[in-house]
Image 1: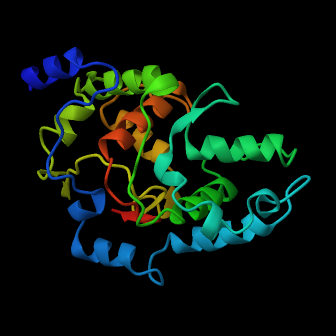
Image 2: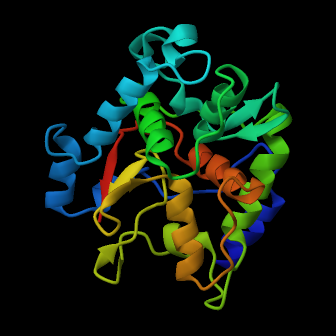
Length: 251
């Protein structure tokens, strides 16, 4: 473990430390019944949010609808979510998909931003993300995204909370093992937003990351914080080559 941490610290900002091979998406670590739920669009409970997102895409909010600028999401949004988080030149920082959607809501539609974890934001995010299903994740971590990527990598290897553990201890060192009756994944976030049976609701990746902070007894960063976005970017970069299947289902 120490060797891996030292190696990660010595790599240039645009490089990635060794990670589990072969890459396996989170759904592969779920039970058969959960895998079946995710794979069946009629049984997947998260599909309700995707359907709601499709309606919201066409619905006028403020001065316009999403479709007013972007047309048919099936065409214009294909592959978009597979490139997020990404640096947004207009906003001057790396943003995740929810933040990009809210930027459009505020700036193009002239409407109030959607609340984190609200049904409209989750629905629109799930709908947009679902257009990238089957597209390989391809994240940019060079140029203006380098510093955010570096911060995310730092957080991934940083011990946190009263339990004094880091993300790498579970998702690199212990993946495939069982923790509290659930198998530990490799930490690749390709199927989010996801419906968690524990939550009985769809939730964002940031909600899941905050749950990890809670689990190790660490202070939870607020939704939309630079640290959570940086961690999202780093995790997405580790998942390069995997194909999303949104909405995911997790226990």
